[in-house]
Amino acid sequence: MSYTVSRVKWEQAAPLLKNVREQVFVCEWRIPKHIEFDRKDRFACHVLACHDKTQEPIGTGRILSSGEISRIAVLKYCRKDRVDKAILRTLFNIAREMDLKEIFIYSPLDATDYFKKMNFNSSGSVFMEAGMPKQKMTCPLSEVSVAKYYLSH
Image 1: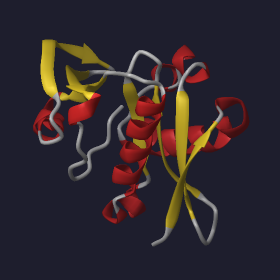
Image 2 (image 1 turned 90 degrees about the vertical axis):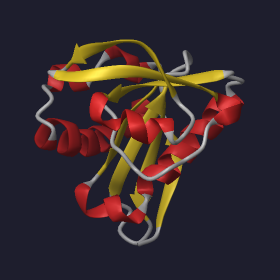
Image 3 (image 1 turned 45 degrees about the vertical axis):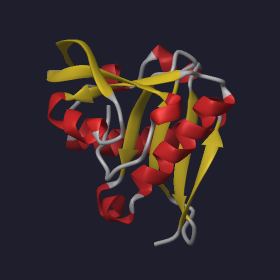
Image 4 (image 1 turned 135 degrees about the vertical axis):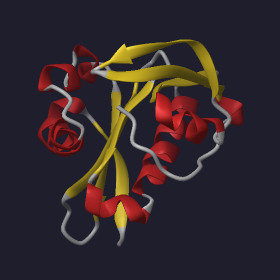
């Protein structure tokens, strides 16, 4: 499958971004809508992956000026196509454009090994968010690499 990842503005692309995130996080992961969609969306840089042939949205992610990467979601039928890697690469490039020195993610506890393969390190204590244990993971932007995929809320 062929797809394109583009930077989009929340104001224009919110319906498309919300559609993907609702399917993945609200329907699949059972995360309440009021937790999934927060005030940070207005201030974040968002990316949207769309199927080249149908132009349907298939994935998304965001990065904040603080360096927090989050809301990486790929529709189930597209996960084998490494859309997540393209989304992450685009977010890493945005972080470089923002001249960030470090990025971080709040990883589901069962995904910390995945992020360690990308040179992220655990930071702080495990905490609960949306009913699941999470671990903050940080990485100097100069050391980031893209491994196989994992969804991140």
